[in-house]
Image 1: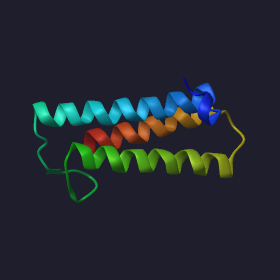
Image 2: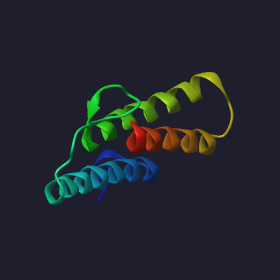
Image 3: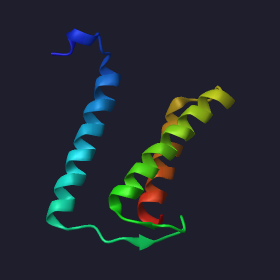
Length: 91
């Protein structure tokens, strides 16, 4: 199925995961419309905004991790997910 682009399984898993996350967010927004609120980001955001900002922040954490340290990427992933979750919940 993925031979047309020579994808590795981890790359395919990331893009499939992002697709499912965005589709799930769209369905959730349809069932329960998001309400904008102000959190520690000091701007009015709804669920979709916080998801987008969280994904960008997680990407920045991962890129920064690669640039600064040689420690395990599993630890980097845990930190990136923590940052995204904090932004999603309290942002």
